Image 1: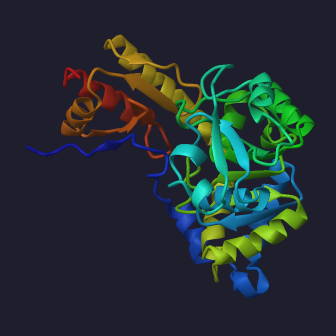
Image 2 (image 1 turned 180 degrees about the horizontal axis):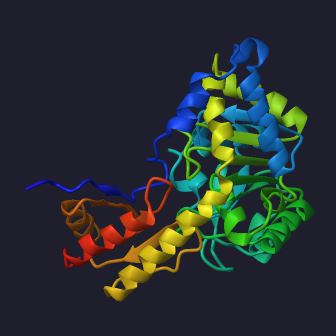
Image 3 (image 1 turned 135 degrees about the horizontal axis):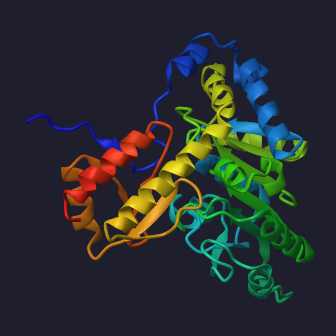
Length: 340
């Protein structure tokens, strides 16, 4: 019996570059990015800065490195920083915020909805004091969309209130916008509408957009100049980086296609509900399913070639550009046969 090809819904990072992207990579105009600033890398950074409403930007190999560079620049050793509970910088970056950036993380509860703290929570938890032995809160880290909350979106008015509260308290603001493109498309607003008031923002090119590698850290020129030095310190300097940047430029031409992924996530959610599953209504390209036994459910899914991952005690499914509507419909047929 022929084993059906797997339908990979583990993450939007599993995509593979298509022929157009591979051709752009193969023909990229390149130089030594460490010595001379590779021309294609420069073009990508300038384009991302324009999209995000900042003056400058820096390509980095990963979102984790982009976030770490920002935290290393914003924090002094022992400073407290606030972030929504379950944020990527808290739970999925190997403790580098504390280990390498020297920050003391303090999670904010989701009192405004999934993945979303209120400005009042920021004010209350900053706990500013002049006592010499007290923690000094200096940074607010936001995340849009919030991965751990199932791709939940922070709308522009809430983001603006959070950034304003931070500024009132004298805090810097860093935005982990790994999937900010998804939030932008879901809300129908430009990406820059979701970066108002931030001092830095990181966006990913390999989540959803289909580039094989790369994120971009954006901010003001002096911040990015300092960030380039930290990137080199962390081993993130690349030579002929234009080969990778070319993929990023092609990826940025595909922002609108993220809407198809959102549609497919809703199709998947509706189909699972019809089969009796308890799932969140997806706001973007992710959905979380509450099941009695996560590992048993994942095992049953794998047995029929549907791949998913655990997330916060639930099963997470992620749609992406390499999963079509017909793939989602096929996944639902397979799932129906498992009794999962």
